[in-house]
Length: 138
Image (cartoon, rainbow, N blue to C red; front, side, top):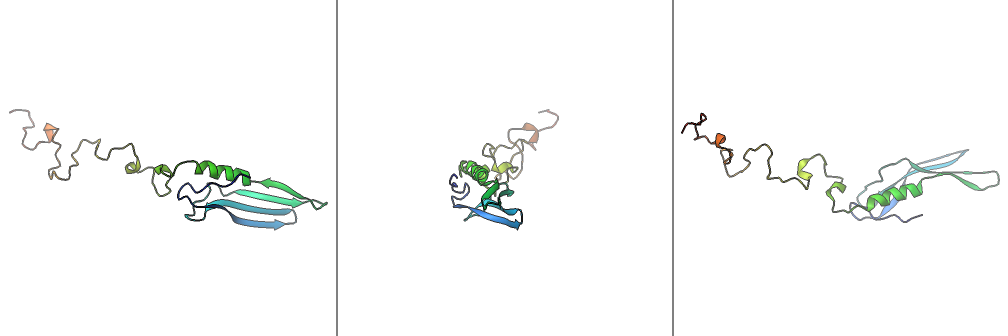
């Protein structure tokens, strides 16, 4: 099995965590997730499992082994860089202020957001000048 990569959010150590353990006459099932021991970030799916049974000869038969898939999914996510703000679990992707392509000084409404101008008028728009004649007469 491939080794777990470091946490993509904090660089902490990733570990398997048992979320449920069940046993019956038909075998044993262990449900697990992978999570970071530092920040607690967890693998996206928690329904991975390992299920085994024993046959009449005493051999252990693996019915389901989700460990390789879980490691692959964790490591694939860990390949993304921590510098990418979209990887931050505390960042709201719908908040425009978190968009690195958005200029906070570019207001599409055209209003003047200059905090030093108490009038709120847009100096580039003659219609917003309180001293101008709205009829256009000089």
